[in-house]
Length: 174
Image (cartoon, rainbow, N blue to C red; front, top):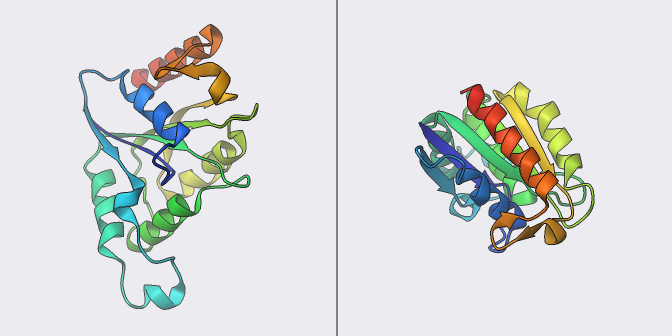
């Protein structure tokens, strides 16, 4: 199986990047395509710029999704919403194909330093993504990242068990 995974952040030190990398370790027999949103940087979407055509980076993002059997996305939260980097890619990609996520099975993750674990952006994604071809199978939020995550692992036993169960539920639906 080919799984495309990414953190919806353009930070080189993204905690959501660390979480998505951990999640991919649960798929040792699958081909993982770990995207870096910095590879898809393009002008900020506007109707005026859209008249000039969809940037090649949006086409490349859509192609990566199309070539996948499943998606794992860890959503970073900025001011209670999607990061600007992800939202811009999402906006451009949807100009080319409204069904950005192409009905691929999705595992959505989120984390933050705070207690809510970026659950606000996770809820937004759960509400919005189905309109764009998002087939959300499972989701998981890790609060208090710096207290619960060390050395590329979740150290809180309850949270680790919850992530393991969430990923197993996702696998059961693939």
